[in-house]
Image 1 (cartoon, helix red, strand yellow):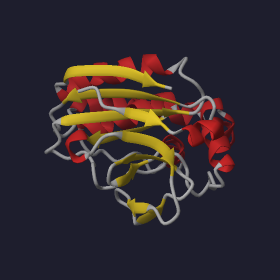
Image 2 (tube, one colour):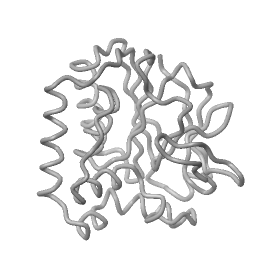
Image 3 (tube, one colour):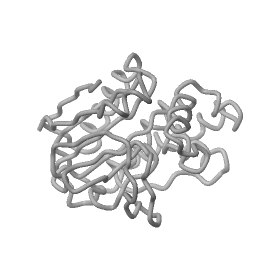
Image 4 (cartoon, helix red, strand yellow):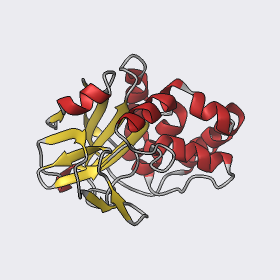
Length: 221
């Protein structure tokens, strides 16, 4: 299931430490079992102890996202990456929505690692896939959101156009109970040194709670 994904050179110029951690596998999408829900609740409590608003933006991983967004002329406070947005929801006492086992695993890894992750129904995508800078007039309807202007955002794009970003994904390839082929992407603008462990953790959780098979993990630079 190895999927062809490349990083555009123009984006690399703005983010020299960029890389993508990728997992592909077969999954069964179901409501999250109690054990997984408990792990999410524990991660939320740990994040509340670990962060305050000021220390969050000073974190090297979050700071790397914000710096790249500024270099792309995109306001990082308006277009927050999903990991920062998740932690801010927790700190505001709002908690994280429970969606399904795959989305909840995605969010659990994001909370623990502070990396932004996206999960996609691979059968809804049309490779090759490129991680590039969004163009003029490009955008899509976000999951649970209105239209998102992706001009100057780093975006994943297939033959039909952008479908995801570290900030918010489109409805096109969202994870539903019909999803069988999963593409999970970890976005890093701070190098690859620490991402392999989180990819292995995601793989373990997918096998335990989403019956993942035919798993492949790779890093793209």
